[in-house]
Amino acid sequence: MLRRSIELGDEAWLNAIEAAWSALKAFPHRFPGDDPLQYDEWAKRHNAFHLVLVSGCDSPWLLRFRKLLHEQSERYRRLSIRRDSGRDPADVEVEHAAIVEAVIRRDAEAAIAALAKHFTATKDSVAISSGGILEADRAV
Image 1 (tube, rainbow, N blue to C red):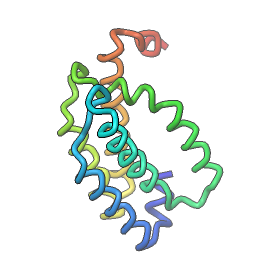
Image 2: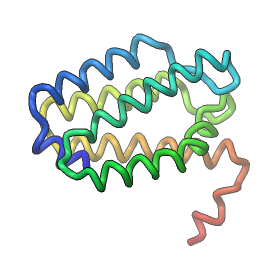
Image 3: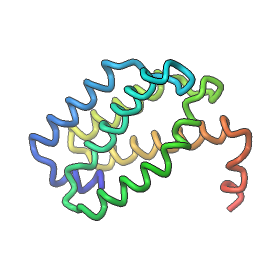
Image 4: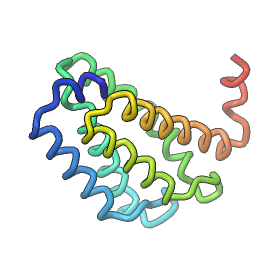
């Protein structure tokens, strides 16, 4: 979806990415255990950021499928941002910045690699935070 968005996204799409990125950066990273209203606002901006990245693709079906996957994965992402996950909130901002920079350059390979790195870091943090729940996944 990201590759297709980079190929098809117009100037309005790029502007929407920059706006979503600015909105996310303007609101400091939160942990789920912090003030719930503050965390919920960060999570809302985070979701909007990730959605706008792929919103330039021309597939309503893929966008619906992405929404379903996002809803199912959100509980695991929340696990990944616990204070004891070993993941620094600054790292998340750096990961997001790398994605945005590659998208703005319209470098699909770099954008996809940065997004994959971001998702992998989240997965790894979930594994640390979960105390081994994901060990079965690694064995497969």
